[in-house]
Amino acid sequence: MISLVKDILNPINWFKLISEPGKIKIVFDRLFYYPGLNFHKIKPKIFQIFFKKYIISMLNRLAIKNKKLKYFFFTDEIKTEVENIKNTLNFDLRDLVDTNRQYKIFSCLSHNGVAIINNAISNEENEKIKIIFDNIKNKNKIFDEKEIVKLNSHQKSEDVRVLVLNSSLKSLRELRSLSDLISKNVLGKKIDAKAHFMIHQSIKIPEKILNGDNNFHVDRYLPNLKLIYFPYDVDIQSAPFSYSLGSHKINKKYLDFFINNNNNIFDETNSEAKKFLSKKTKIIVKANSLVLALTNGFHGRVPFEKTNDRSALFLTYPDFNLFSLFTYWHINSQNK
Figure 1: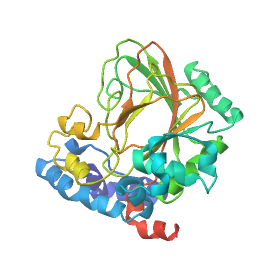
Figure 2: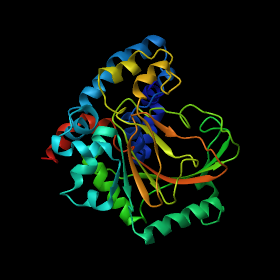
Figure 3: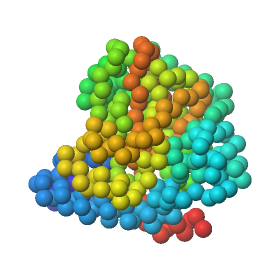
């Protein structure tokens, strides 16, 4: 935030904008960036305290005005006719694409914070995704060397190797269609997803824990959606995704966890996190499964229990930003 203000006040940057108007998009993205958890970077300490005490609450008061966000992140009620749905996490594609059955999967997602769609896409598109992962793993020259990123020891456990290809869903029509449908229903408007093809390769067992990777943690203090597509089976020993059911609901207890968090520890190593971790669940999936997760709730990758690798395609929605929160009235008008 401070660096952004400095850049805006720097006259040199204004000359750059005049000469290169295309960079206005960069300024917009920085200005309305959906905030994360880097409170420790806010200096001096008094600004950090102010931000936590007032800005977190203010932004969530904006978020609740979005009717879709209110249902998924702020409302605890579940209708009587779908009471039995809250106890299952597994659904099939028809439950998502059939408008008469969508209430099942979205009721589950609202109540639990996570849901699974089995047999999500066709075998043909599944094979396309497998080929991309094979090319990443085998370092085929189809990709520029700069396109494939290796995460460093500050981003993942030192006992795994992680390769990441940041891309789009341009060539994956079916998955893009599902992403559009889900983002429209959860966030209130269709948001183009960013695609992150990630391969986790186990190096050493047992695996050391890195907070924010292979333990329970939250991504943000605001409503947040992430989809994870698994082209292969992921069993209990192969680092499955895990989620603490219901931990995504934004209420006083949830907000106090962030506001009163003096050490800025937002994972299970904080003793205050225990109150959100009573329903920890390992998400074991079959090949061709799509996991819907509200990742402002507590989640994480389970450590590998055997030497193996795990391929997962993560879909994120950074274009749902602060501007989206401020324009809740327009989003609501599109969902009448």
